[in-house]
Length: 203
Image (tube, rainbow, N blue to C red; front, side, top):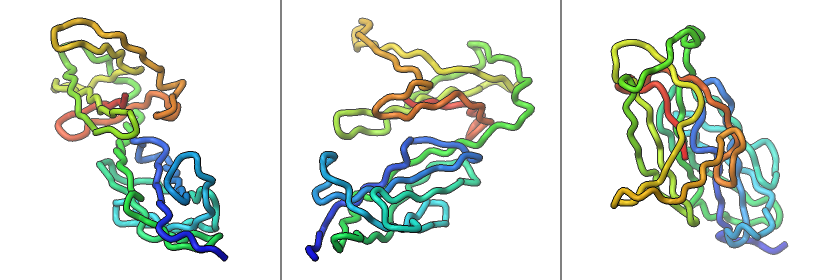
């Protein structure tokens, strides 16, 4: 049986964010070269979720999947700590077998009765998450800077602006439809996180 030494292992959480009450599915892919065009190899893997817990896939699949529910909000860096290519046998390369995940706490039921935020209650900031394979990710954070509870519903619109103030051509895809980069998702309420943050979105 031919071996496949150094086969790259890739870890995908299928999204860059999640919520404390939702199950996150991690996908572990193994290929001979790491190319998206390669036929996936059956693999078993153990994933460290970054919160002090880990789990192993139950069988040799292509791709292998592992599920987890986070109990606390925060930034996590899940990674594959052990993996085995099942057929043909081989020692995988775990150099790139990690991802980043932002977990939001789910808001309490009482948040449904909060009034809608006004313009003066909300501050918007952005954080670049880096890029790969021709894409760039940014985290857009909407923060309640007032002393009273309020809520937002839906997703923010976006417009690219050049350094000289010109409006650049911009295509916005609804989160409910999803895209090649981001899976379809619906708006969800999140409570205040770190300095009264009431919500966040990804584009």
